[in-house]
Length: 150
Image (tube, rainbow, N blue to C red; front, side, top):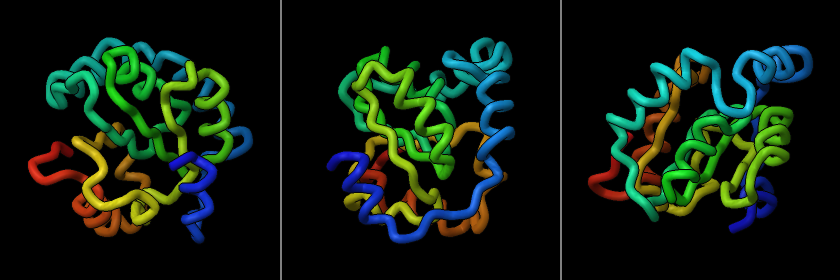
């Protein structure tokens, strides 16, 4: 399913503060490859916990401008990035090699994806900004394969 088709299936997008000047500020802080904190500490730690394998389908929930998606794609992972900020997803798409699918969508409404479509889901430094959190966790349970990793 293409990002456009996925967006069409999502009838509700949440309001997000990650627009305009905030999106530009965040992109200047994180950039294409992540901030120093992300590159040196967060991303290696997440990779150690996640243990991604080539060919796995992984959802990067609240992916921002796609810095971690890019890391996963370089490891041979089939990556989908989802974020509520149209501006950050636009930046991610512009920087993408075309191998990562980016979707503008609501992290609390993951029913835009078929059940059990991902081997793993990551949400890096973002879940605290998503309300209601319960529906995010519930949605993850629906779109992750049995035995998958969150």
